[in-house]
Image 1 (cartoon, rainbow, N blue to C red):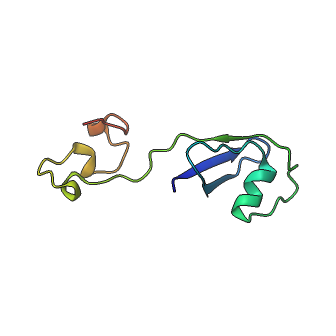
Image 2: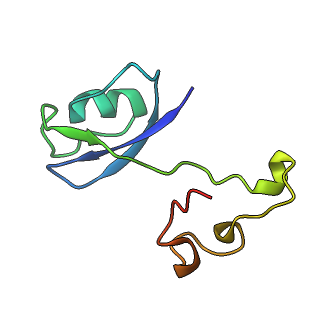
Length: 88
């Protein structure tokens, strides 16, 4: 099952949760219930947003390719791959 990062607008916290692709959480209360995280002083009705994340990087060699992308050999965001997501 895929994992998603959600950020709470009220408190700035980011939590990771697993759920189906078609499912979407919309409140801090829903997110805390799914992750077991304490609500704290944040209202359970506070809005959350799903963040766009890059996921895990798979090295080209792990897929049987002999061609390595520039960003496979350096940190993401390096100038060689244009700030991440080089698409090669």
